[in-house]
Length: 137
Image (cartoon, rainbow, N blue to C red; front, side, top):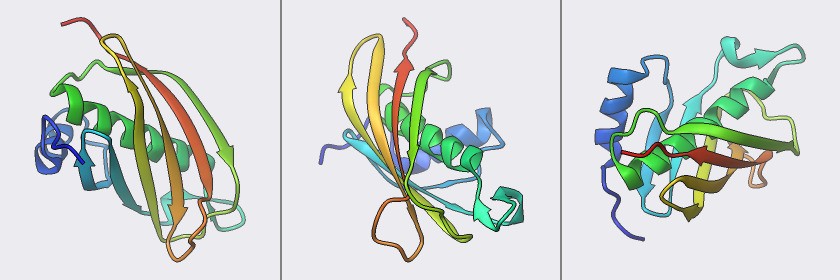
């Protein structure tokens, strides 16, 4: 694993400054990817008591954004251009974990995938592929 341009704590603070609704914790960050955790509560649930799809998509998107910031530094306007999610299992309320992996880090585009895990379950609950556009600096 290779050290990232920014540390996990630097990205966490940067997001607190520019994106105050970010409420996940950055558990790990390096050049290859990032791991985030979100403690879900009633706000994140859908009818039936499972974590909602929009919550899962938001966490996956945030995990990839963190992984990209770890590579390119403080570039607030790196944006999602495509996100595709496959839901495998219903995640139970509790901690949701996102493991983001950068597959291609280019000058203009970054491509990656994210596996989502529900606390206490070994198998992923969803797989996400994401492409980000990186602005010219």
